[in-house]
Length: 126
Image (cartoon, rainbow, N blue to C red; front, side, top):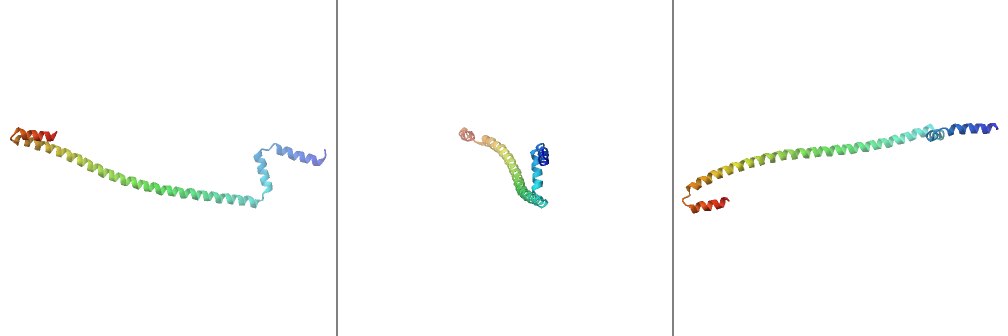
């Protein structure tokens, strides 16, 4: 074999054992200059910065929406507590009214002079 062929075969044999990733990296290093690789890095860092800004903006929007939701829930809780207090008061008043009405009806029952009047009241209570 001549010397040119041996040199080619030895370079091919070293490449054949390399993985595809290693081959691509070697080809990229051979084909690109240091300026080009810096330019690619800057482009990707700018894209990354843009993506991070977008994510941050969305998080801030979500944060403000969550604050609005918390405010709304707080307002609803205070209104619910107010209504709950009113319902309890109405239930107590209703109980008091029933008790008083019962006492009133018993007093009237004995005051009425005739059975007919008692019958009228009894029919209205049922």
